[in-house]
Length: 174
Image (tube, rainbow, N blue to C red; front, side, top):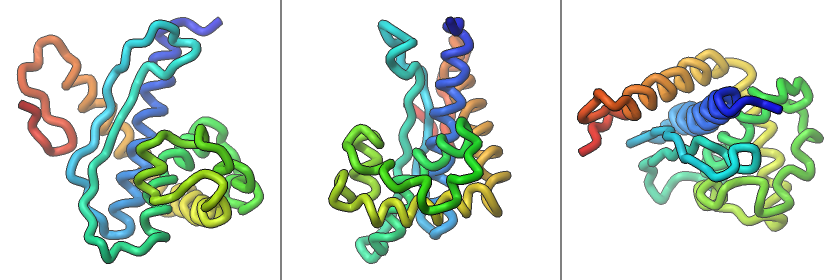
C-alpha cells in the first residue's frame, strides 16, 4: 500500500501537470491566463479521492474558435495521461477513441472550459486531444514541466504557515 506522503506527492504532481497543461496550451493559442493555482484538498480517504486540486482562469473574447476552447479544456487530462502513463501512443488518434465518452472523463469545470458534452462531442475531443498531445510531447514539453514546477513551488509558499500573503501565478491573494 502506498504511504500517504507518496499519494500526496503524486496528487500534487498530477494537479500541477494538469493545470500547467491548461496554461501552456492557452498561451500557445494566445489566450491570457489570469490566475492559476494548485492547493491541498484534505480528504477522508486519500486512496479514493485526490488530495490536491487546482484551477485556472483565462480571458478570451467570444471570437475564440471552438477548437481552441476544446484544446484548452482537454489539455489537463492530456497532460496527466502523458505524464503518468508515458504513453507514446497518446500522440496517435486511436489512443483517445473512447476517452471522452463519459462525464467522468474530465471534471465539470474542464467540460465547461472545452465547451463540450460527453458522447456528443467525443469525436471532436479525440481529434483535439491528439493535436494537444503532439504539442505537449513535442515543442511544449519543457514549458509544461517548468510551469508545473512553478505551480508546485507557489503552492508550497501559499500553504506555508509562515507566509502571510502568498503570491500565486502573479496574483496576490488577500
